[in-house]
Length: 116
Image: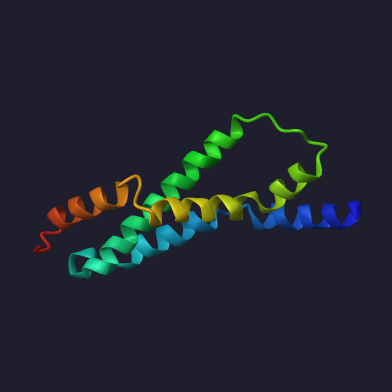
């Protein structure tokens, strides 16, 4: 079992070297002309940014928590923690608790002169 966990850990560390969320967000932001975007496309981009922001805040908070390196839970969190964090950030964004996406959406509409 330890060898399997070690192998998964090596694979995960290689896979996780690039932040897939930031790459996805960057690709979306760079490939879309938001002056011609629909309201849904604009709000989707704002929600992606808010989700990324929340994810980064959660990751920063997690760094402040002392870890017990010997526990099985710690090993699994090392392997799958980013997936959990991304999902948690998506849930927070979909609940519209922060309002960051809505604020960005309204500002982008003003900046791109998109009619209400």
